[in-house]
Length: 251
Image 1 (cartoon, rainbow, N blue to C red):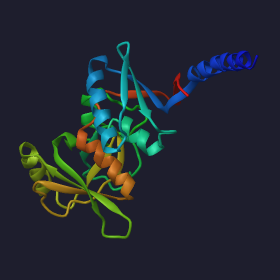
Image 2: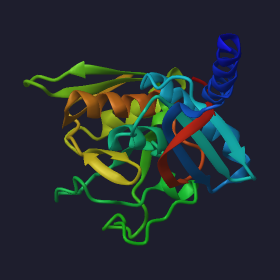
Image 3: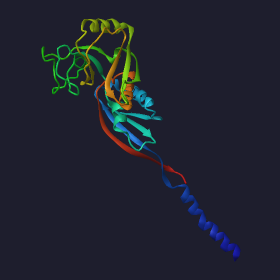
Image 4: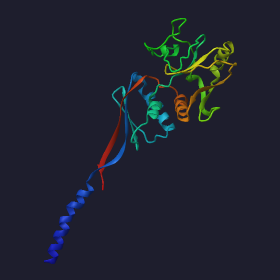
């Protein structure tokens, strides 16, 4: 009788053990970013640039899935959210321009303007300003495509940081000639159509320059990351940023 009872107890316990092994649990959590790419032939290049930016932000093990012709899904495991700064660094187009601001007396910092480089890329902002004397887009002297290197350097005041850039050899003559001919006039720094700063040219610049706009370290570093890997080749739209969970069987 005792043997029978022992066998029954063991048999009753077996299904419980099997059920524990088959419990559906969360094996991974993270953030999922879905974006739409305007120009479908640039999808692969968009992915490459965003992955390079993600690596600089120390976002590891990013998984990418291309859905259809114009949608990219990216998963960032281990995150519970993407900060606004990180999201902007990953998805902002990152077109930085050095723009001719001769004769512009008013402070346009923070204002949006149309430039020749934007127009060449098919970007026209109907609410943005044009050159007031000509009615045409502001003239772009160089874009960040001409930058050979970019690094963050400390400013002259506490907790301010600047961006030091060097110009590749084939664009140095244009940069040098413009600054030589326009000492005492303004050269604006414009990011994605927004005027960041418009300093006065004090001397001929040969092969480097400094972007100084009272950045804190994160602002300067995030901008440097975008400049280091180049602009996105297409406008993109963030469709969603949500958390995700991957389920699996385990104890």
